[in-house]
Length: 63
Ligand SMILES: [Zn+2]
Figure 1: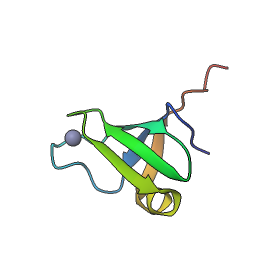
Figure 2: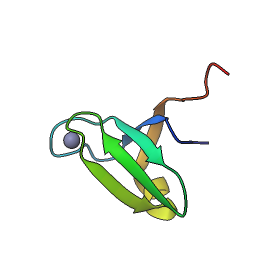
Figure 3: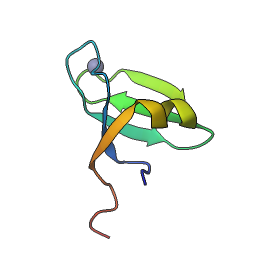
Figure 4: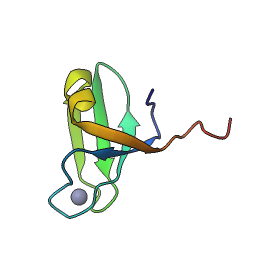
C-alpha cells in the first residue's frame, strides 16, 4: 500500500527523463511530484493505480 511521502516509479517516465515521484497529497485525488524537475501531476486514485509501477521508498518504512 502507498501513502503520502512515498517515492514511486511510474510505468512511463516523465519527459524530463526522471522516473521517481513523491506522493505529496493523498485524497480522492493523488498529487505526485517529479523528483527530476519538480513538475506536479494530479491523478485520480484509479489513474494512479493504473500508472504506478512500484514503490521505491516507503515513507513509513522505519516506523
Ligand atoms: Zn520531470
